Amino acid sequence: MVPTTQREAESCTRTIIVMHGFAVRLTGDEARRMSSFPGVTRVHEDRKFYLQMTRSPGFMGLDPHHGAWNETDFGDGVIIGLIDGGIWPESASFSDHGLGPVRSTWRGKCVDAADFNATLCNRKLVGARAFDVSQSASGMSYGTVPSPRDKDGHGTHVASTAAGAAVPDAGMFMFSRVERRGAWRPRRGSPCTTHAASRTARQRTSSRRWTPR
Image (cartoon, rainbow, N blue to C red; front, side, top):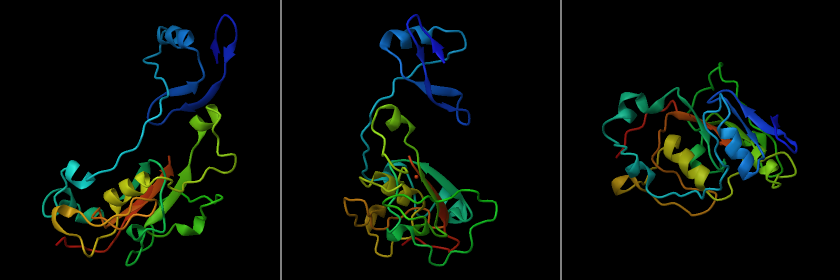
């Protein structure tokens, strides 16, 4: 609770894992006052950003013949947690063909929502949840159980780049055909890694060896 001369601002949510903080609705003057309080490191305004997606493997400097892919057995046994715009589980990038069981220490889960069935998760996509605290505070709540379903393709693109299944017909420069919508055709990611997606989405790696062309 943040006391002011006129009212008390109610906290929308609190964070303690990545950083200690909370979200609250304030006027510009109140935010400036809070930034000067003892113990307050910084005050950030919640802003809307637009997702972009072009040539991610090249941008990240991924090399199919040397580097992290080869040195880590293509991510075998790794679970990657992704916080993005959601995920399109039907994409072939998230097929669990050839994968072993999910490790017993995994505690994540998939949720049922209006357009997302928890059974869509598998041994590749091991978790999918959605969080809409910021949207609720802005008056733009889903109105039902928040869905981890990808709406614009960005979360799916990022997830498949990070830990997607191997692409059989990938061409030069590590790029393959994609469709600009929620479902993306498989790209060269980390085929041995598992995903867990939060929408804000998660995923896992495959236990199958893969040799890039």
